[in-house]
Length: 350
Image (cartoon, rainbow, N blue to C red; front, side):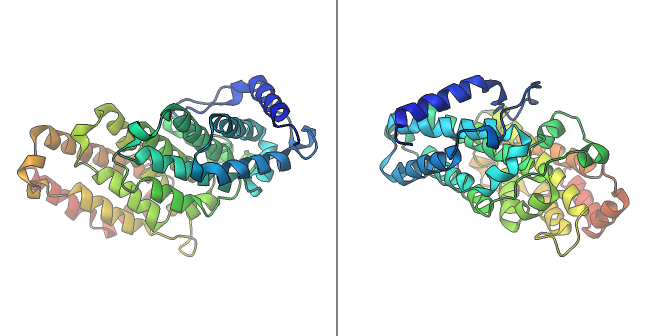
């Protein structure tokens, strides 16, 4: 604590020793590693308290801008916490500490900077800021989806109920900061990289797939508004990389599928949002009348992309209905005037 250089050296060595646990790429299944990082009890005395103070100091200095050394330290701290959480017995304790809220505070400020139109001029080095954000989101995943259920899901491997029941350790309780953080990240986000938006969507999916309690906290009117807005955000598609935009749409649809399945297994007093409300907004978007758009926004390319979105949305309905309580969900779809919407869609295609 009295020697910051020694602390940084210790952290450097620790992170280097367990670097194989830093699976921060949401698109990849976690690497299988035989050993695990140490339990908290095996760490030096008071180390977590010392690191909390260091992290708090970084947060307090954020407003004035972190110096290069402090920026490097903050990334190192997040890497340390990710590694620590890969020993799943540490997740609960790490989750109850204030680290996550400090890290979300820093990530919010960094994302605000990355959303700025003047970011190229103002930020000498965006790389380290983006690196922090990506690692911060991966740390959240480590807390809230310790078994990486979401990564398995998007890779096409569906975990059975039995497999999930064998998951010994529970995810940490979701911080109340998450929903406002997620919502804020997507506000006025046209200058935020699509790849970072994909990471945010991956994190939302991970929270929903990680455990029902956290999922029901994360599935709120605000987060559903974000997901629908991401799908509806066709206005500036032509300015962006189509592959990344396409991936963003796919992830959003996978998130919505996961949301519908979670809501189906919950009771009405647990839910903040009803499935029929989500479906109502979903069909409304599916049947959007793009002929009402101004001509300059209605290019042939735009129309073909919107049709591609509609096809993906229709395919997602099939994915949503692929669940254990299918008859119940079918009834909800029928009550949401599913057929009327689909008939209108066919009529609009003429």
